[in-house]
Picture 1: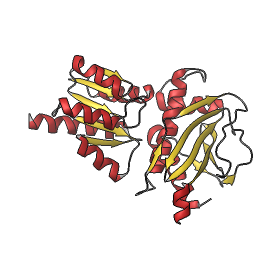
Picture 2: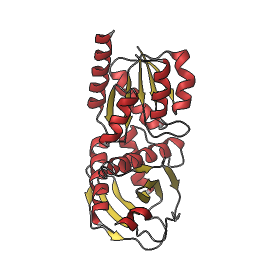
Picture 3: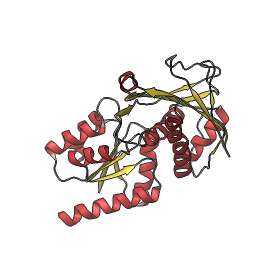
Picture 4: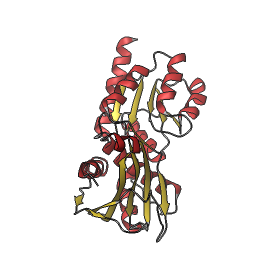
Length: 124
Length: 159
């Protein structure tokens, strides 16, 4: 299972990485913004991406829209401080499969990752 | 300043600190800030724009900031390290992002965070926006949230 973490905060990527490691996932690629992520997805071929919304250069929503033009199936989880309902709807319309609002507990993130991967596996 | 603009930041800092670091925050009486010098040596700064504009600063003494960051990251960073600044930036990002959610149906954006470290630094905001100091007490020490926001000009004119 290859998982890509897209967040401009190294602290946040480290927290997410430790949750993923506890779930038994160790094949992890990191990107610091949407542009960086787009430049890495072809080579890394992620099975899941965790995407922040507010990032410099290219934000998470723009990444999701660009990624969905080339890949309709890989699940995407938005992990962001953007908590307004309108934002959640906007993200889902763009192609996000699940949504986690910061701050989160490790248990909540873990639950959303497991749930998202289970749904993706059921569809496959 | 309208108290309803301040309340979301109070509940947000309590929510962020308790969820991410299991650190309860006791909030004291807010007051209006005089001058532009930051209260403490470490400042995490976020700008707000859209229907509300201004800035929010999380100001912490160095020792307190190191202790809070250590709870957040599990690492004890020097205040001069990039990782320390990154963590402080992410904390103020969560505090503002979470508070912003309380302004439902308002188009408000927050900037990427900036972090300033050093004694007696100044953060200047628009002179016509009063800055409210929200004093907070935690087991890691005292810290202050400085909130200087107001409805944008078009909104104020329409009201």
